[in-house]
Length: 473
Image (cartoon, rainbow, N blue to C red; front, side, top):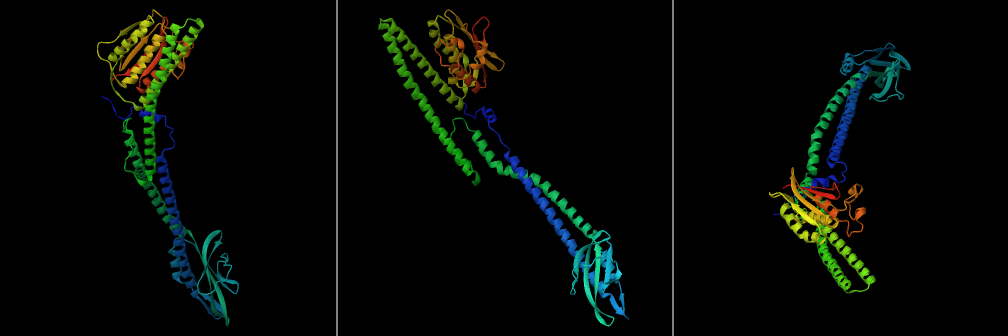
């Protein structure tokens, strides 16, 4: 019974993905930046509007007060009298605690008021006052001026009146409105924080749903993604389905190629070796026999390399598929040791196989585990000397099943231990023995794909100790 759940090593693969900036964080920061700009814009808009409204209100009051002041001017007996109406002061006091300045000018001479109150550069005409900004004793004021014609000294004479007021009241009103606008902007920004989180999650929610749907698939499930997504994600889903289709085709072609290549390579090499061995028995010339032995060795090397390459391709393919099921290591090793015993006896080697009485079951791909153990046993037989003994032990250590293969062969130099795992790497002391340099690579890959541990240690007294540990089911 195979396990077709999602690959257990998926988190390890995701750890190798190059991660950029968080899309959710970018969206939240963009939303918050937009909210901050909106809040600042709202504050500035309200502040400008408040300033203009307060200024317009002050101008209206100042215009009415200036008009009332001008209407209080009377000419009697060649004298100019000014009646300062109480309404003028009451209107101006409504704007706050401000200072008021006035000035009345007749024929270029100041009749009454503050001479420090400057007149506008342009003489106002008509009944509408002219507004302008000026300074009185170093204090900025808002002033209004108008011209009124009166009968003075028997002639029609124009009198210019100017009335000014400080802007403290206007500033106080604008500041009060601005403070309210500021609190409104801060409240808007604070409210935008959770809204940004909700909006970012809502936008990225469909992406997470698609990712969860794909992650829940088993390694054999190469169906197109049929999730319901927003239109904006349709190009992404189309590209993903196209990739899945290409992957399915490539996977099918790879399996077909491996099967065909194994058949078309091994069969001719076996025929060449058989013919060369027959010719070797029939040849009488020593030189020809030497050349035939080289042919046989070369054919053996090619056949072994081809077999190892095919096995390695199979290991890589099935490691990606990650087909898992219960594997009883005792039974598996019984068959392997029995199949390898004739080869060992041809080399005058003895195999000692020891296992516990109870079953030792791991969860894995039976074919891959068998391939790894066969390579370990093959290396022990190949590099051992005649009349040596090879010990194969199976035991349990904690939550791991441990397979140990101990030989008294040539051993491995400590300098070579770290360099044997890559493909086509071999120890310096075994160059004269036929090998491809792929056996230990396959064992390492099988161990990694099963979350196991594989190590090679020099054996005390000479030889090598190969240990493969796999998690128990």
